[in-house]
Amino acid sequence: MKTQMRSALLAFGTCMLMSASCLALERPEPPSVIVESVKFRQRYPWNGLVDIDAKIACSDPVTNLAVYVAAWDNVKDRALTVKTIWVDGDTTKNPDPVVKSGSSRLVWDARADNPGEISDNVSISVQAYVRDMRYLVVDLSGGTNATEFAYSFLPDPPEGGWTDEYKTEKLVLRFIPAGTFLMGSPEDEVGHNCGYECIETQHKVTLTKPFYMGVFEITAGQYGLITGSGTGAKPRGYMTYNEIRGAGNGASWPANSLVDSSSFMGRIRKKTGLCFDLPTEAQWEYACRAGTVSALNNGKNLTAVGTCDNLEEICRYAGTKNDGRGDGTTSADVGSYSPNAWGLYDMVGNVSEWCRDWLVKDLGREDAIDPAGPAAGTTFSFQTSSRYNKTGSAKLRVMRGGNWKTSAQWQRSSLRTCCSNASGYGDERNYTAPQGEPYFYQQGSNSSGVYGEMRFRTYYSAEWGFRVVVLPDDEMSAAAGGL
Image (tube, rainbow, N blue to C red):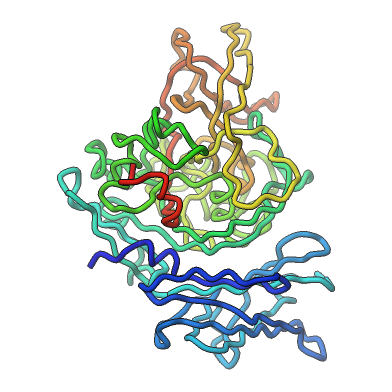
């Protein structure tokens, strides 16, 4: 049965302690959820545990509610790790708390999650949402001939995991709660600021609305069922921003959320009635990190710019091309490596992923709330290598996540890179006469330490891909009819 996405996204409540008010998003279907009266206290004598009390009101008293807790150190102005948390009285200490409507107490092992950390000023937020709606599943099997794509919800991955069916004939997205995180990277992080024209200045970002994020990169099979071209479980490459959103209305972000009817987003919006889009840069990094504050989204840090053992289980990159998960000459099937804490696969490596935003070189240090990127693209001027001796300029869109050809430093959660709307980048041996369209050529590590330069050519690379988000209904209001 088709369920209205409007209700699913807004069946969600949150409360931030030490805030003047509580945010409650209510809709009649499915059950509305409100979180209020959040209080917390450390246990005495101190044993590392913190009790967190909250009143969670749900219009359906028997509905299972998932709880998400986040903590912020107001002294050091950074997120604290919250992963060892359970419902008080649960002897199994299940770290994925589930409650019902009413008063609840959660127990957080703050010391285990943040060894050596001490703070006398901490804020804690508690969010709750309908547990059975953690995953959104869109049925694409009808292909281009279908008049609509039905969708449903799952509380957990199916028994046996996400089979190829969910990577080719269906499209799976995961609920991502609202929250605050520290975007960017510290100056001493290995690989800091390695992306072309992209600075990773750390700053506090708050996303006030939940959203659904694609569990996998869009595959060739999914793309084929929506547009008529492509098969298989590898990510769809050779993608441009214009093909995904459109060169007309689709180029208007952030003025509005419109997309071209013939674009990928236009087609899937029309057949689902949902506000599908690319993630903003902030949404992408928030989802990639999944609560981590480390360089990598598995909670570990990078040890070298070229290859790093800490990456082996989480992504296909230049250092894992020959690890047996594929033939080593292209991207891997999506889901071949381990997911992050929110169940998202291949957020780094495999293919680089487009974001909605125009590129701004440095996002700065100011706090940001729901950032949408600059109002208009910044024009970047550049000169190609002396081999071609060409100059030019372009307005660039943000890309994230590194890819299977790039070195370890490009697989960090904070890595920023870019490309023009119409182009990709390619290997120099494929270079032909200039055609006037700039693209970013990612050279990779070499003896001189140079990682990138601009060249001229309209060229579509196998390393350019994307994943999708589904946004709350108010984001769709400016795109009536799904276009």
